[in-house]
Image (cartoon, rainbow, N blue to C red; front, side, top):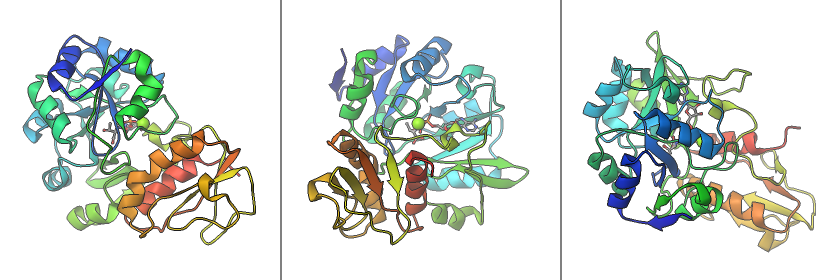
Length: 317
Ligand code: TXA
Ligand code: MG
């Protein structure tokens, strides 16, 4: 059985012994293990039921530590790191041998991030190794934004979950890589594109799914609830439906029972909507409905990343 608590010493002990621990971050909860210990990394893959070709993000607490795990930090990456870390941004950098192959699924780059959560930053400071941590959900399901979400889904396999409250951003980190002096976004996420471009100028976006995706967060069937989800067109309203649920931006729809609907942000605040997105999807998934309609969000700020998640969660037409 799992234990939920706020004691970083307990978390430290489990991690030092090679166990996995649920950790809070500002984006989503992670399933963390010692990134330098291949057995701990294997446990992460096993508990998540994650295919070995899907690499993990390495978390640490300072740029000085990051420099030990990579062989180079290109100038735009350094600029982004200095501007946005700790924060919801993951950088793909050339891997140092210290990082086991298992972590990067054999790729020459390693994904690194300094998360912005006080408890987890304290934890990372107290450890003499970085933490590999994917989102703490079974592979393919919605990412957890509370400690209870983690306990509900992985509880019997995770001895300790550090409870840092509900995630303040609510979307996985934005992933950005650097090739031939070009910055490319591989996953839209909790750091808005507009903010990134303000610092390093225009970036390419390559988030389409392929059979061999560079970032499997790009796989089209991902982040999905169990109930079929239908993504509406902008301005479209769903037909009257007694047994449908709806995820809406500001206001409930007329044709769907009010208690089958969840509003992301009554005031139309995209950051608030992002914070609520995954928890509301989970709630809708657990209601006695047969399907879920989702209203698309405005394409600005975090709206891009939310629409990306909804498209991947949706049944393909
Ligand atoms: O916000 C987040 O990023 C959360 C929290 C816990 O930090 N973590 C997270 O991890 O979302 P995960 O494993 O669910 O998603 C990481 C994504 C995967 O799609 C993986 O394919 C991609 O990062 N990735 C990791 N290393 C990569 C690499 N070297 N090259 C390309 N993609 C990589
Ligand atoms: Mg994930």
